[in-house]
Image (cartoon, rainbow over all chains, first blue to last red; front, side):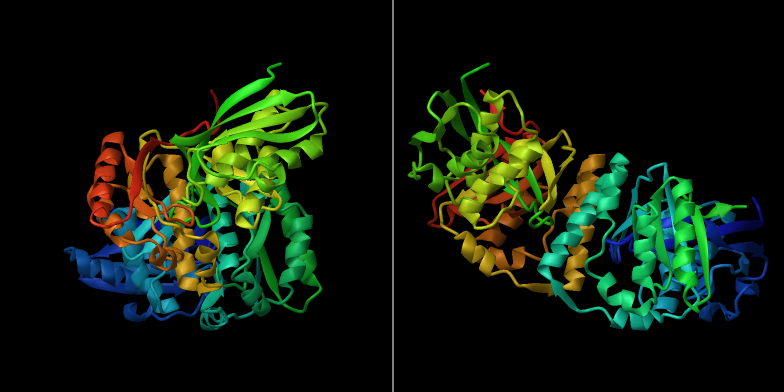
Amino acid sequence: MKNEIKIFSPATVANVACGFDVLGFCLDTIGDEMVIRKTEENGIKITKIEGYDLPFEAEKNVAGVSALAMYNALQPDCGFEIEIYKKIKPGSGIGSSSASAAGSVFGMNELLGKPLNNTELTNFAMKGEALASKCEHADNLAPAIFGGFTLVKSACPLKVLELPTPPDLFATLIHPQIEVKTSESRAILPKEIPLENAITQWANVGSLVHGLHTSDYNLIKESLTDVVIEPYRKQLIPHFDDVKSAVLEAGALGCAISGSGPSIFALSKSEATAKAVQLSMQNAYSKSNIQFETYVSKINTQGIKTL
Amino acid sequence: MKNEIKIFSPATVANVACGFDVLGFCLDTIGDEMVIRKTEENGIKITKIEGYDLPFEAEKNVAGVSALAMYNALQPDCGFEIEIYKKIKPGSGIGSSSASAAGSVFGMNELLGKPLNNTELTNFAMKGEALASKCEHADNLAPAIFGGFTLVKSACPLKVLELPTPPDLFATLIHPQIEVKTSESRAILPKEIPLENAITQWANVGSLVHGLHTSDYNLIKESLTDVVIEPYRKQLIPHFDDVKSAVLEAGALGCAISGSGPSIFALSKSEATAKAVQLSMQNAYSKSNIQFETYVSKINTQGIKTL
């Protein structure tokens, strides 16, 4: 059995327009790299962090917290060292903490001979995610661990559904370099919503799931709207409406806030359209003084990968 | 081309627990019979109504109103006579008015050589439905016309999705002989609902659609819950909780209010279970003084049938 594993732990998009708190999908070209190594000494140690300034104490690091949860449950006769090569900026809205929380438990599971299934791994990763977001969510973790599109039917008990990924879907993302605090983006949401809007939203969730099953790109397009959350959260993202209209004009199927922002994602049918959408995002944002990065990615149906 | 057609126009179940206002499915053993006949004289005439006391004037009868809407749009060089053999009790919550509204336009379309598709037929039928329910809804019409399970993604413009029907699904219904006014069952609903409940509901809609696509009966079972509407409307239906718990104990996958009630439906995997569920419904209700009827039906994937 191997004593060391190097993995790619991907960025993810949660909510996917209509599916607040339940839907997500996995990206392919954006993600962290991590090395997980068995040690004779017991316990979890984070030995290296590159890219961003994050705590080395396992109990204060999302990758460490999820690793400790799994470690304490399994009580293996070894310890683990974790190296984190962080490429996803924390707070960007594309599952940075989830990539870390998922990566450590995935790597440990591989080195232990896969005693746990993906749902069990996600459950442990949720302990790390809770450190970052103050609550146990799986809408970024599930796509990172399962790959493709996922629907978190319930968080407790955890039930993740793996939805099909139509072959020609590509994602484009723009990450404006501003800070949107998760606490603020949660606080801005209403506690109650109009029943009428809720009906529109669940019609769209149902039809998006149907569109993914039938590879009906036109239906996917018609379903990628968010009448519940976006009207509130878009206020926290400068030029959101400009980006959205530019992106739709460039041929995207849909465009919405990625997770709690500030990143914005679009889905397109074909890589060529996804690249045209990238240009339109760049044009829309280059008029502002805000720094930004953009990415094009196919949907990653595998999730975390061994390198 | 035929000058006369006899059809079976089925009862339907709207909402299907989690999918208020958007989901529905079609029944097989319960429905009206109608005869539609071409006449030389122009216009729409209702010449016979058996079963229930309903208006003969076309403008006051749901079957007449939908027929007139289609007739005025197509302006054929003939007229139509409609005979209605009403078996679905009006106000029972299983799409009585929809069966009438859908049946007349379906029959006329057949006699005219099918100039209209199912979506166009549903649009005309909605004019008749509006006479009964004061608003244009398609959540009973769509399953009657398309058959199987349907999702009305939007009413205006009308977009109906045809969902797959797992082969072993059977429905059981109980119709307590009490009157629940649609106006009352609408008025009792809140205008706003907790965001948290809305999230639960759209997770269930998404997972029910996924469960239908994958014939995952366990997932269908877990998805057939309604945390938004049922807590309000069940107050209008005596012994609802007794029926529901008896039915679930008898092995049903799920149980909820059919449309706006008072009928209650259950879904089961296998006809044998659906019949056991029927017995449990009868037992639960026989303790009351309320008259009732029960039915077992497979899911009708065809919709309206030519007899």
